[in-house]
Length: 427
Image (cartoon, rainbow, N blue to C red; front, side, top):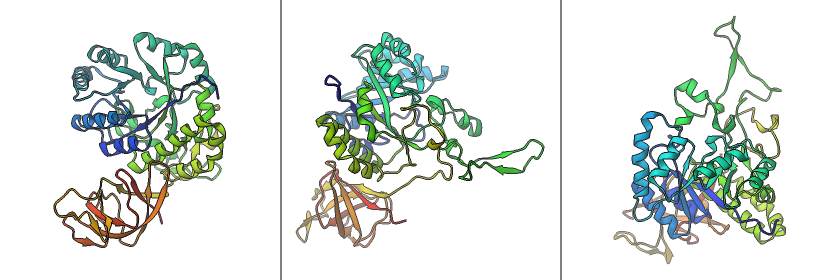
C-alpha cells in the first residue's frame, strides 16, 4: 500500500430514517439518501424533510456525513421546483446536509446559486468516463465526481493522475449492476412508460424474455444460452471485498455501496463487513488477508445475486450474467432493530425474571423458542433464544406475525440499543 494514500470513505445508502441510523451505527463514514423529489429512486421510501433533518442531526452527532441525491435529468417543468427544494435543504435546521449528488448541468447551476457553500458531487448518471470530464466539473465548482460503472481500475488510476489531489473520486464497490453503461437504458421507458432517468426504473433487465419471428406472430420462442436459461440481461452483483488494495491504489477517495431500496439488514451487513475490511487493510495488509474468509462469509449473509468484479479488471464476459433465474440469494431474515433496552413506558416492567426487556418494531415473523442472532456493529454475531414476547400492553404472545408490530422481547442474552436481530432463513 502506498504510504501517502488516503483512507477512503465508506459511503452507504439509506432508504429511510431507520436504515440511515443503521448505516451510521454499523460503520458508515457517510450516508446518501433521497428526498421526496428529484432523485433516481422514485420507488424507494425516501425522506420527508422532517425525517431528513432528524437523520442529518443523528449522523452528524456520530461524526457521519449525509449526501442528498438530486440526480434526475431535469425537464423545464422541474427547474422551479428544484430551486425551491434546494432552498429547503439549505435552510434545514438544526443542520443541513453535507453535499448534493447531481448529474444535470441545469440542476448543478441552480444548486450552486441556492446552496453556495454546499459541496456538489457529480453522479455516475452523468457518464464520467475520462479525466477531462473530471476537470470540467472541477472547474465548474464540483468537489467530487462519481466514476462511471464501466471504468476499469487502470482508467480510474489515470484519472487520479490527471486531476488535482484535493479533487475526490467516488466509485462503487458493492451492489447491483445495471446492464447499460452508466444507466443509459431505455427498456423501462419503452415497456412501461416509466423513465429511468426520471427516477422510475422498473428494472426490466431482471425480467424473463422470449423472441418472436416476424412471420409467426404470437409464437414465442424461449431464448437459451447454452441451456442455462433465459434471463439474458440479468447481471451478477458487484463485490470488491477481496480487492481493497487495488481499489485504494487506484486513488479512489470514497467507496460506494449501491442500494437505496435495500433493507436495514442488507445495509448493516454490507456496511459492517466493508468497515472491517477497510480498517483491517489500513492497519496491515497481512491482517486484511487473514480475515478474508470472515469477509466472504459475512457479505454472503445479505441478499445478493452472485458476485462479479464488474468492469474493474476489463470488460465483463458471459460469466458476468445470470442465465437461469432472477432471484436473490437470501440467507438471513431481518427481524428488527433494538430500539430500547429496559423501559421508559408505563405498562412495561424494565426486567422480567431479572432480564432486561428490549423493544423492537418487528419486520418478519418469529416465535417464542426460536433461535435467532444478535448482529452487533463490532462484528460479533451472538446466538440467542427468544424466551418471551409481549405486546406494548404486556400481553404475553407466542409469535410475532404482524409486520411493524411493537414488541418487547426477553432474550437469553441482552442486546444493546441499535443491535440488529436476524434469523437464518430455513426456506
